[in-house]
Amino acid sequence: MDNRRRGPIGIELVKRGIVNEEDINKALDYQREYPDMKIIDIIHKLELCDEYILVEALGDILDEKSILLTQSNIKLNVSDYISIDVAKKNKAIPFDIIGNKIKVCFADVLNKKAVDTVRLILLNRGLIMERYVTFEKNINTILESLEGSVSDNINSTGDTIGLVDTIIKTAIKKRASDIHIEPMEDSIRVRYRIDGELISAAKLPKEQQSQIIGRLKAISNMYQEKQESQDGRIVTYPDYNIRVSSQKNIHGEKFVLRLLKKNLNIRGLSDLGFPQDDSNIKSSFNKRNSITIIAAPTGEGKTTTLYSIIDYLDRPEINITTIEDPVEIRIPGLNQIEINEKLRFADSLRTVLRQDPDIILLRRNKR
Image 1 (cartoon, one colour):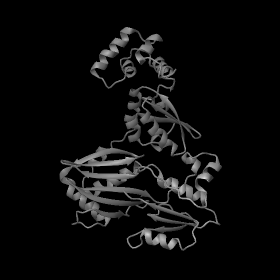
Image 2 (image 1 turned 180 degrees about the vertical axis):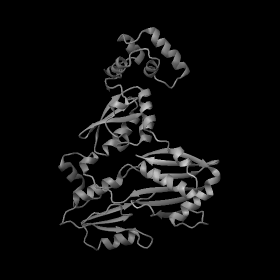
Image 3 (image 1 turned 180 degrees about the horizontal axis):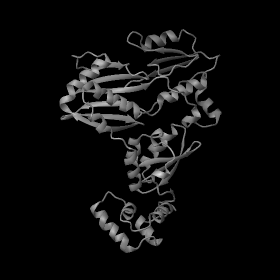
Image 4 (image 1 turned 60 degrees about the vertical axis):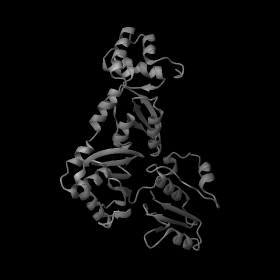
């Protein structure tokens, strides 16, 4: 059915004989008390209709695939594909996968932003999304069973050293790209950026602020007494190169930690959603005289895309040099240069241009 021509869900259900007018009036009375709930979810909650018949009717009305999603329907590890935080925010749960096609159930398939957010995350993993609709109650029940209490985990840590370590290790476990540790007026807010989305993780007591700042500066090799903006690095986590940036605001010093995983696996361009047609890729990247710019928000896959392009172009007769800050993936056969305090981009580029390059990759993680 064309969604632009269908009537309200309640009227469509009455037309199909799924519920009667008295049921709809009960649902509308309930909705006046809980205006954020959709009629279909109220009918489900009040058990005014058999749920299997109701979800099938919902799919028919919306012209979408539907399923009465339960824990038994889930044939995969949800967090392997999207974070639980993103799933919760977008009311979406991946539940089955066959080849490169993944089935995802939404509480609201008409929420274009939520659907597009999940679709792009999965597309960046080389997966094509097949969407389904179900009741919000079912989505919430499953999410509650999957969700670990990050805030409780962080707040239960006693000493400052253990607290900072828990914040970082939890971010790594949840595949966050950034950690924000932000002093507020009466607390310290911890947020993680996961799959491009900034998610609140915990709220810490204000009295812990000076100890947390001191610990972060100590492990980042920053000046303790300096409160102006500083940059540092944490190298105590074996698989990660963590870049740290501090900046003073009206409530204290805010820290942002960028988690850069070492030795990431390079993925094929087709796995990232680029066309399977090789001629299109060649016309875009394999040119003798050109500049390719990759631009996107934090955590959206710029580095992954750049390395995939370089891997695609790399062959013995091509001289490829990279100038990076930092080098995240080491690729055999490439001349990779890492920028540091003594070695600047401008100086490196000037030298590289004298080294008979065919391709130069410039990549800098700058906030």
